[in-house]
Length: 315
Image 1 (tube, helix red, strand yellow):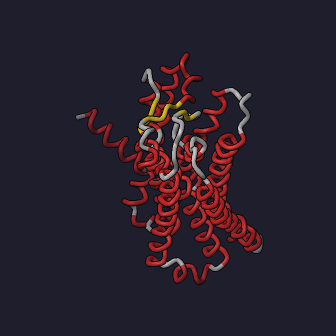
Image 2 (cartoon, rainbow, N blue to C red):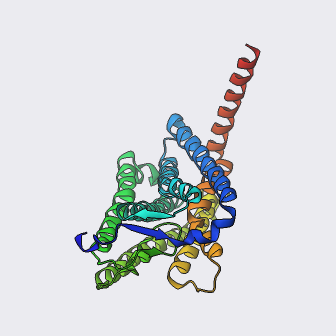
């Protein structure tokens, strides 16, 4: 990192479009983050405390919700602070830490969604072998890999970027992004380009495994009424979450690399935070409403809290 020692702070110019309504945005940001915390923490506790939900599918779901908390923690507190600040800047180390958190959040989400697709494929297409294929030990190994592989991949990417000679400090976004920092380099970025292409190919393969699984799932589900019921109850919410995440992230990726200068900064900002706003809110809502086990458990918990509240008022 010695070749980047001249850059101590990066400025975030994306906030220029928020000058006139920072208080409103701060209020919405605080509300959104509170909703994300309440929804995801509630479902994480529901899955952990209910032994009937200690199954591969719900373990994967729990990891998806934990990852939502992890990713949003790397964005919302800093974003809210910047909205109330006169100067929107981030330190060199803080920038790379934010890059690591946000990118690893995205990749972990991708691998967990792929793991969930595999779990549903085995459950519906190979129901008799499900408990042997998705054993507790294998599920633990797959979940661990869904975190370790993305983390290792992002560490390599961040290390490569940190070794570049940075000759600028002006980032045209509201948070630090790897591509935005690479564009500020005045040394060769060939290693970053090659690794980025390699990593993209790897995760495209991971992404393609999901539709491949669902082709087999649909074929199997159409054969029986029970198969169609399982597909509707457990696969539809997964597809909605996958579509939700993919569209949100694709918008940010396209604007980061190919966004036109004529596009208003406020529109760019909205597109940039979609994958940090929509999936963390809608994932727990979609699964909480559609999956009967979780919905029933949450409903009974709410009723118990309501009864205790009434008893407390009477006392």
